[in-house]
Length: 265
Image (cartoon, rainbow, N blue to C red; front, side, top):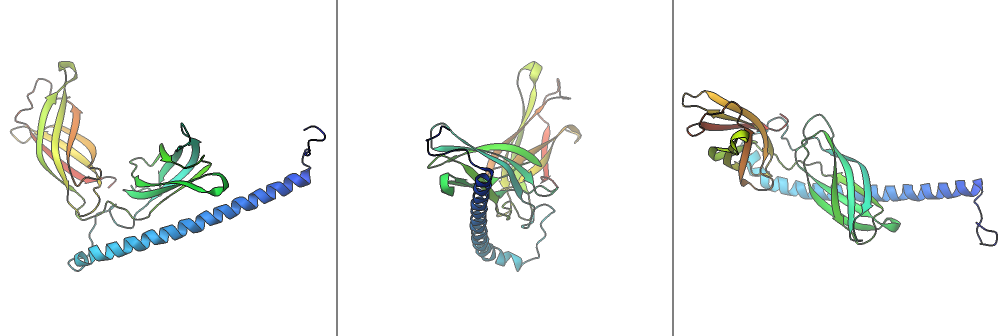
């Protein structure tokens, strides 16, 4: 900085004063956002409470809840950390990278999470609410959110209510068929089916054991896989496995079966 430019190097006292002011302003912004999140969470929970009481009261009068482990309404949640924000191509998109972790050792299931993106002056410039499901205890991910200005910061929070609940927590599998696919050197077995989510809730995630039995009822192939129908209560699905152990054996006549349990149980 040259003499006469109107500004010189800050003294230590000026630097400390500036740091104190910026820290105070950041603290005020954090408190403001925390208050906003608390209000939003209470509003969401209130709305969910009305819906839950209206829909579940007839069921509660029939029998006490007997949801299996890992599928109750009050369940571990997702923790969002290591959030970073970058500007996407153009000026209308924010690229958010983050880490999603289970809040405990149990699979949280499916939750609604809300992302807020802030611009200059702590202005809210973008928001997105979407379903969160992670089969890993901790993973990094990325999403893009439309914004109205240059993104500077972002925050995320997940509603504590689990969406995929119900008793029984299961799919009903129908039209199960098996076929061999692929070239001779890379033969695979494909099991196709139609799955219907049984409870009156958001479809869940299950771990399935798929078995192929011969005419005598003996298992000739046993595999495990994870299945979810996404947002659809009824969906067509496919399991594909290497045909190890079935080389040279016809699959026609094999009887397939699918038995599942809640993921993480």
